[in-house]
Length: 80
Image 1 (cartoon, rainbow, N blue to C red):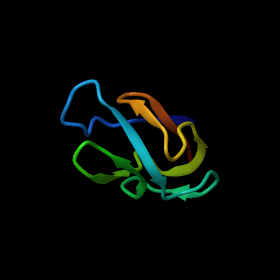
Image 2: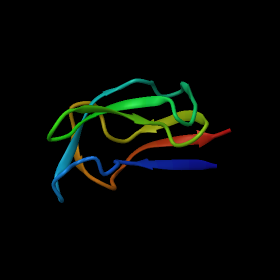
Image 3: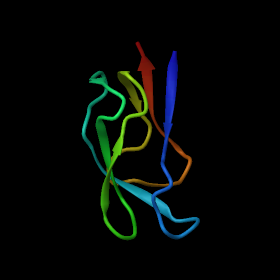
Image 4: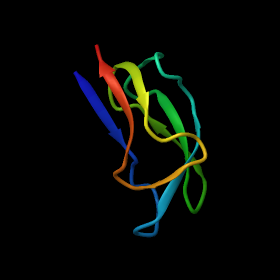
């Protein structure tokens, strides 16, 4: 089963796109729920975002340096 991870709503202003500063895991890496998976830049600071499931990081849909709206699918995790 695959789980899609979406860009969380961390911004203080509605409708703002958030940027991914860097991924802390690579495609194919095992990941655990609660593990820091990526860093996102909001209008205030850079924050870590935790993984939402145990499994393997199958796909990164949004690369470092890209900005996308809240709710956009950013990664797919293959649940073990």
